Each structure stands twice: as C-alpha cells, then as structure tokens.
Amino acid sequence: MAKVDLKSLSLAELKSLKLRVEKAIDRHDKKQKTQALAAIKAKAKELGFSLDELTGKATSEPKAAAKKPAKAAYRHPDDASKTWAGRGARPLWLKDALASGKTLEDFKV
Image (cartoon, rainbow, N blue to C red; front, side):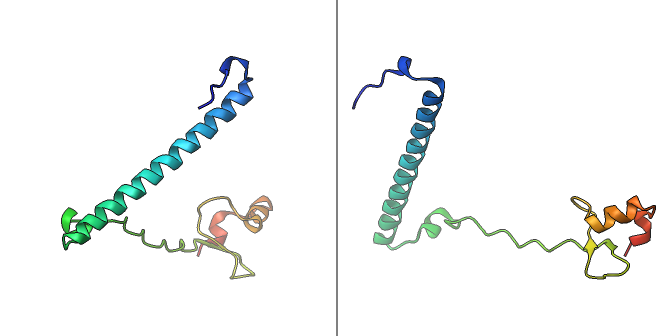
C-alpha cells in the first residue's frame, strides 16, 4: 500500500480523503456482515433449521404501519377540496384570509 504524505495535503483534501476512507470502511463492513449472515443461514439450513427457529425472532425488521393522513381541521369556505389539518405551515389561502381580518375559527370544520 502506498504511503500518503498527509502533511502535504490541504484541509479540503484531508476532509475528502477522510470521507472516502469512511465510505470504504462502511462498504467493507456491510460486505463482511452480508457474507457472515449468508454463511450462518447456510449452516442453519444444512442442519435443517431456519434462522428464525434458532434465534426465536424474525431476521428482518417488521415494516412500519402506513400513517393515515391527518383529519382536516380547517376548510376553505368556497373550495371544500382545500383543507388544512392544523399541522405544518399554513396554506396560502389561509394566510391570505387571516391577513384580511378573518380568524381561524371562521374556517373550523
């Protein structure tokens, strides 16, 4: 392996090198883990077991349940398709209405 004269590198070059080394380490670790898991699964299968049977749990993470959209708390008076759940940034139609003197209560569902 070639030696690198770190003293001759600029800060930007050192940071770039650090990033490349970290990525290489991550790729190496992932490859090693994948190979180890494949070897363990093969050995378990050879002995007539699944990995789940040996560990007592699933080998993959359970999938998160899909989130439902929040219920509308405020509705545009003229266009019922325009709603806001009261979370996140206020929609433009509501900002404009509030600026013209209306209150949030005027749009409550």
